[in-house]
Amino acid sequence: MSIAIALNAECINNLDLKPAQAVIDQLLEEGGIISDEQQLRFEIDYPHEPDDPREMSEIPEIRLWFVRLDAQYPWMPFLLDWKAGELARYTAMLVPHQFNRTEGIQYNPEALEIFVMQKVFVVTNWLKQQGISSKSRAQSLAKMLGYELDDAFFDLIE
Image 1 (cartoon, rainbow, N blue to C red):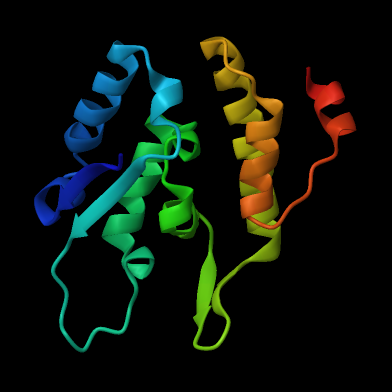
Image 2: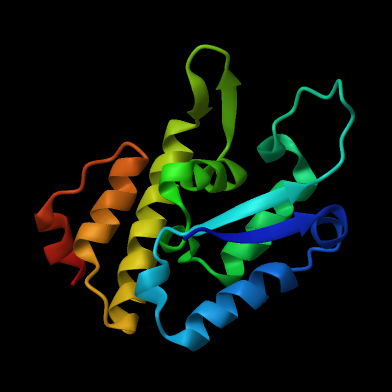
């Protein structure tokens, strides 16, 4: 079951997180956050010129909205639908990158490494607070973004 958060130009331009807050708060109140793992996706309706070649993650207003969302919910990657590409899109909103016609998105390597490690720390801590096993989930998150984390790494942070 996929859960959508609909974003329009008004909420993006006003940095209004209410559409996301309503969905996330409901998930947290229901207490079944584990059953909603990797279910969340964003439906972005933001007008731009037909000849504008930019991807959504290249539009400053949209990126700023996602920066604010990430500040409010830094563990958001846990809920995103990774299989549908939401983790990659979310990452693109927060990490400098370029698009390559043949190879797709190319993240700035240093920025991606910092992002991945910060998310591993945040998600690991948040999952522990929720009473949810975290090591394999954090390893999977890192792996989706191209990083392998050894079990010994988690011994250091536990």
